[in-house]
Image (cartoon, rainbow, N blue to C red; front, side):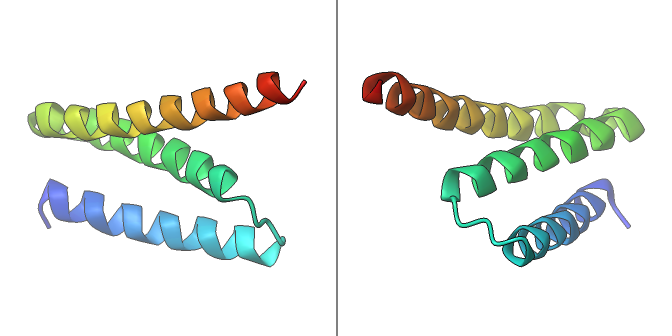
Length: 85
């Protein structure tokens, strides 16, 4: 199996496990779901890059996009907290 196929399969399995476990615990916050999924995807991206140096450039772009989304949600959450105080 190619590196990209393993990456996609591992993301799909991890996202399924995270979503089912968060739904089972009763979490309804969409930004919490997004934050956890981004952290999981960053970890899987980092592990994929470490195990396959050939795919470093493409997966670094994917990791950067995930990190940018994480920062956007974090910034919006901080504005909401600071603005409400």
